[in-house]
Structure formats: C-alpha cells, structure tokens
Length: 293
Image 1 (cartoon, rainbow, N blue to C red):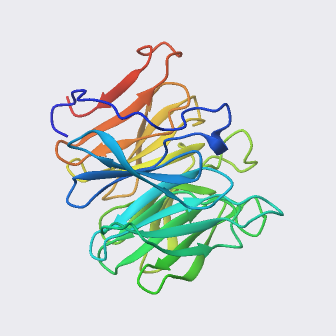
Image 2 (image 1 turned 120 degrees about the horizontal axis):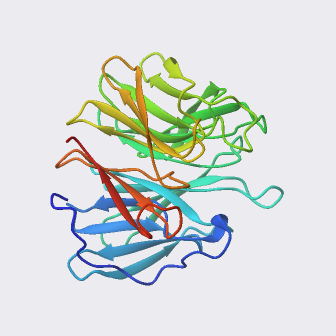
Image 3 (image 1 turned 30 degrees about the horizontal axis):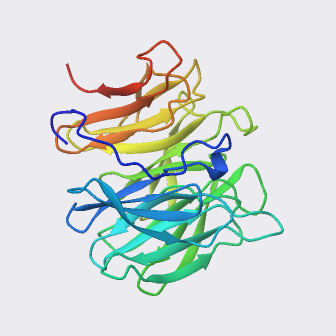
C-alpha cells in the first residue's frame, strides 16, 4: 500500500450481527507472497481471499461457537494462527493452526484453558514462535498474559503473566521489545489506564505509561520509530497514542473517532490507518490516514 486509494471490496462475510462475539470479518493476514488475504469471520470460519480476483476462494471452519478473531502468519512454515474466545462451561478458548499450502489442512487446535479470551497473535521470525495476547487469565481481572506457541510442535510452551494491563494489542518492535495495547482503563476493566512495553528476552514489562489505556490494537511504525496504540477509551477520550520506540516514552495522544480501536500500519510509507464509523463527526464513514507532515 503506497497511494492510500480504494481499489475494491470483497463480499461474503457475516458482517455486524449486533454482537461483537459473532460479527466479522476480523483479523487479517497477507499470505503466500501477498497473493492472498486470510481473515477470521463471525461464524468461526477463516475466509481465504484471492487478491487478484478479489473474491473468497475457500472457507475453513475452526469449529468454535464464537467468531474466529485475529490472525498472524508464519511464512517459514506456511502456517496461519487464529484465535477463538471460549464459552464458559461449553468450550475453552483456543487457537487453530492452519496450513496455507494447497488443501488448507487444519494442523492443530490448541486449547488455552487459563484464558478467557484470545486476542492478537504475532509471529516472531527471530525464533519461529508465536506470541499471543491473553487479556484475562485464571479468571482474575488484573492478570493477563502472553502465550508462547511453537507452531512446529503445535503446543503452548508457556504463558507469561502480565499484571494490571489486560493485554489485547501486541506488536513486535526493535531490540526484541513488544508494545502491548492494554485494555486497562476501559469502562469494564477496573484497572487504571496503562500501556506497556515488554521485553521478550527478560519476559518482563520494561516501561509503561498511564497516559494511554483503554486500548485494543497496537503497531510499530519502523519508518518513524514509533509504537502506535488504538485507545478507544483512552484518558481524555478516543485517541491514537504515540510512543517513542527508542526511549519507550509516551509522546502524545492524537484525537480519533469514537471506538478507535483498530490501527493498521503501512510499512511501505509509514502511514497509520484508522477506520472511522458513520457517526462521530470525523468523516461519516471512512479510513483516516495519519503520517508525518
């Protein structure tokens, strides 16, 4: 993406059902040399989209009761990981590993019994592992975690506990650091606002700020040296938080549309894209683009 121009849309998703747990499309990943997009949908399926044809060419069921949510892709082993939230008393939260090779075989369904919810997965090419954010574990509201998953062994290696954050967004930055979009500070979290930087080597939080919270998705803009966090319930109102990825210090919050929880980074030009709904006074339904002047 270099010109920020609309080129088409793909139909065939569940859409908004009135309940986020069953709505979709959801997370997306570019796979197979960027010829396809794989996206979670509200009916617990993964939709495979051919970008040249701009249409769905396969639908893969993960077998869950709720939406198939966020995704990430291991290009070395050609494996997509997608998460499903659990239903108390019915099924645990789980992740599904799917081969993106022809046939689209489901390789494993891995339950994560301690997690109430599965959020952002990120593949780390340095060690070939997935890191998956878990907003709440052990049914303790101020205790979240990061699941470390080996896609080749199809197993959870460990769960790293992260306190007072409720991690949702997760993005890899420089020096084996990770930005966590913490749900802390949202209306239902009962935890003060927080955004945290996590070190994968020491497996600890190394920096945090109370000036951004109530967040969901997060990203790293390499061209600008910035972490970006979508703060739909941030202190002072819905905004996009900027954090210096070198010093790990908070820079500023930029006012954004209501419910600004989604942030997408264009690595080709360093732009930050944020969807805006039809209401809220920004643009009546569009994608806002943030970048350097």
